[in-house]
Image (cartoon, rainbow, N blue to C red; front, side):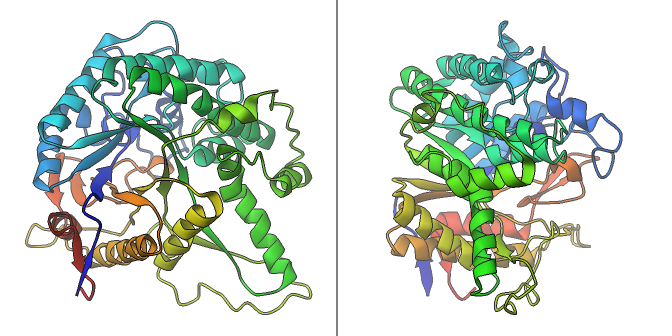
Length: 450
């Protein structure tokens, strides 16, 4: 029995600039916060950097041929802000624009639709030195950046994503110190989150002006938060966690302002005061968008205080986990998509990232056999299809990732790709999961029983 997707469903793969491009200081590119962070001893698990990564900057034509061989219909990639504006604002680096100009033309020549993400975390270091995302001026600089890029590419790029996972950029970058720039201040993190959203709202009309026929959206990392038991403690814990992980971004984007319980949690747990919210900001953030990008990897089971609480009825004890330590929970994707549809009336959704890291190795036959990833993708695509059957306006799916790459603070220790990369030789080898995905695309579906 075949699981078949709608005729116009879009199949793609995703990457980001810092994770694959390399060429970190070539052709006029400025320093990014990830260049600085990865060069700081102790910040990256294996001591590596993104200096070379997958060398995509030099091998982009080879990579386009690879995409075409997989039958990709769309490619989601990000633009390196410091490659365009080395100081974050002001002087434009034409060589950087030329690179993405060639990339877009190369995609279109192969009938691959470009989905451009303007910000996937590689902020120009010059802007960080001036205050970074906690500073409102960075949001203003982002608008100039959006103007420069869309003025050059807007005649051909018809799908724009302003930001990738602002939750991660704000809270892992400024609150927990796990990502660049490595700050540990939740007041700064909350301000950064607000300015990321504000810059999004300011940029949307700019993108529409320079690319009148385009669709504009934003990508959020969202999760399904489940109480561990029916107890009031667990439901309260789940509600607060949902406010922090999901509603802090969903609510203001869809005109509901910041969630009151989330604001109370920030004030209680981290003494955050929302003085960074100015008059008119929330109206700007709620500027209507054409689609929402959803990055989904796992669920969260919330547990309240132990004293007097009920025994958990939902656990992860028998679950499968990826190399990231994330539970494999495809039915949570189904729940999440339905929630977005029924609670927020999101008019159009793309799964802009979904995938899994496993300990992939070259076999004796020179291939990479990754049955666990195939099973992961199959289960999540089935959940996506089931959501469509419920009326969810899901229009496309982008696997994360096209190829193994620099996995942020984990360096090169985690492999998410459907294409294996030998980082010493830069050889690309399509994994079994890539071959399976190619077949899914060609058939617009898959055999439900495997």
